[in-house]
Amino acid sequence: MTQHRVKGVRRAGLAALSVLLAWGPAMAQDARGDFVLGAGDTVRVTVFDRPELSGEAMIGPDGAVAWPLIGDIAVAGRSLRAVRADMTAAVERVLDHTPEVSVQVVGYRSIYVIGAVARPGEHAFMPGISVLQAFAKAGGPPTLAGALAGRPFDQAGALLTARERLRTAVAREREQLLRRARLTAVLAGQATLTLPPGFEATGPVRGAPDHVTRWTDVLAAELPRLDAARDSHSVYDALLVEEIAALTNEGTAIEAQLDVVTEEVRRMQALRNEGLTTNARMLSLRQIEADLQADRFRRDAALSRARQDRVREARRLREDETDWRADRLEALAELEADLAQTRIEVNAARERLAALGAVSEIATDDGAWPDPTAMPNFVLLRRSPSGTMDTMVAAPHDLMQPGDVLRVDQAGPSRTTVSIETQ
Image (cartoon, rainbow, N blue to C red; front, side, top):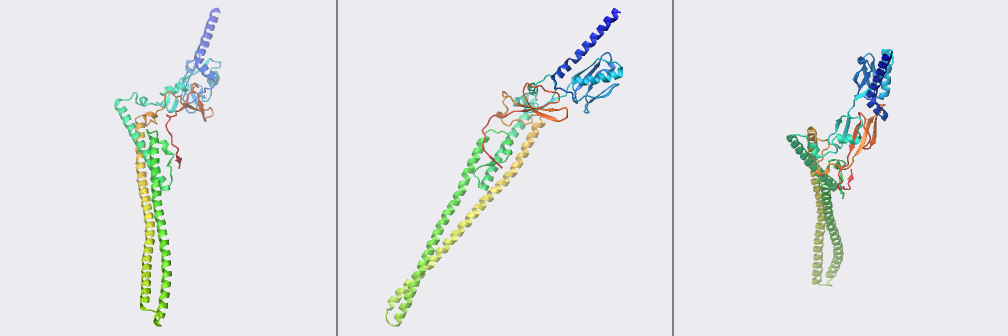
């Protein structure tokens, strides 16, 4: 009897030890109170002294596991403690007695790290991994050295070539955007550059603020030239108006003198008929009348020329402005075609980098990589038990859960900004 009792105690002790060993990690996870099972996790169920009811299974997309002699058991969205209670009840129905059942997680869903990291994508989950550790597991902030590390020589060379092509295409795109902004502003008579929203999205390029300043200076110099031409026309037109007014007044005076002389000629003609005046006086009046007629013809010719000059000057200004506008519209059309081709080259360069397995947003300028000493911003995307995706700001010491998506937002280096109106 004593021997049987000792064996029973040993048996009970071994069972308890088995339960404690099996439940150690699971209890640690459950004690956190925030870990729940999900599709993709692998669980191990141990039924003491019943190997045919023990084993491992991965939770399927339907959130259930299939177990011998028991069937499907829903486990997704539930804690380990709750799953163990369900498994115990299910095994008890099969064995007709209360068994010792342990449930533990032996395989976890992957975690995903996206954003400003050297190796974005899927990574293995480890119990207790923090946000900062997951960030380090993804390679930390992206660097050129990190993007080239571990690559064959020819692949690294191809990556650098593709990167240089992207830098060249992006720089050309920004230059073309600035030229287009200048032409658009000139055609609209604006004194400031108006850039499209996509200008900053083309990426950092060395010297970009200087380019903006340079094209702003070009715009500031071009508009006054056009205004100066218009002012010159206005001055010349005002002079012609004054000349026309003077000639008109002169014509009025000549007509008044002609009227006086003509009246005097008629009066002297009457006196001569009566023999009261001499022919010399008549000849003198006739000469004065002829000179006034000549002055009137000269004045009429000058007035006609002044009016024609004014019409020609107005037409010349309109033609010059039309030609000036047509030239810039043609340049704008050619620039739009060049810009479309450049954007094709930019996209092709990005696709080439992606094909080489480079980080999704490889910097186009050596000084534009994130500062490795600066702590980035972390955002966690976690699926709730109800199936919705929750978004939360995370601290570096926060713990990750299986299936979490960690987004890393890394601010770029400080660089000069330009105040730009947006169309």
